[in-house]
Amino acid sequence: MPLTDLRHRFDPVRVGSAECKAWAAYYRRDWAKVLTGVFGMVRHGFALGPVRNIVGACYVLRANQLWAPYPANDPEAAWRYMTRFYRLAHEAGRLRVDPGQAATLELDWWRAHRERQREGAPDGELENRLVDLYAYVYGADPAAVRPAARLRAQAADYSDAWVAAGCRLDDPTLARERQTLIDSYAALLSANDRGSPS
Image (cartoon, rainbow, N blue to C red; front, top):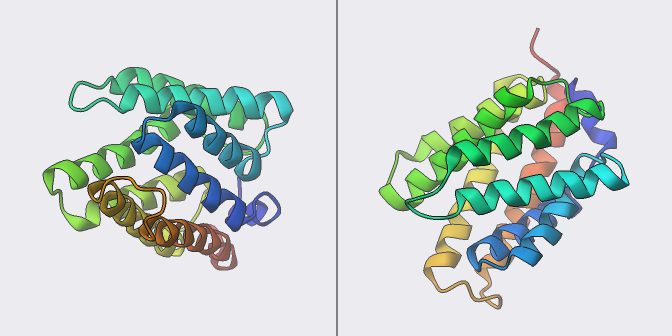
């Protein structure tokens, strides 16, 4: 799907705010609130329709639950659930992707974040994996989506700092994370102006 279609499909404030809620709840292992946040991301980011929004959010939630344990998680099962999510988006006409490939790229950035968070992986790896995901899923020029990827990686840094400080909901770092996610999605929309790769 051309990146030009994104402008009519999501509000960066709604999607970024929903993602921040989902991330915060994920690290507090509050799965009901993760589902609420993920539902907001799916509804406002993909607009799959009333039933598909719920089903898609449940797939993403389950993928996150399977990914969450450290170090004994289940990446293969998480991949299967993310493949189901991307298949829903593809069948709804919101994306034109191979669902398995999109899920692979999704888990690549999850893995890069975990390696950065837990093992001190190189700083650029997370940003690069997000660029790969955006370029593929939205049919975009990698250079055009790099600012959005850089901001989302920065939001992950705020999230990690918030987790390290104790996951307090009154910690002002959470507000910085939320704003950076909003800025990231705004940058993803502005990448529209640079067009898709030839």
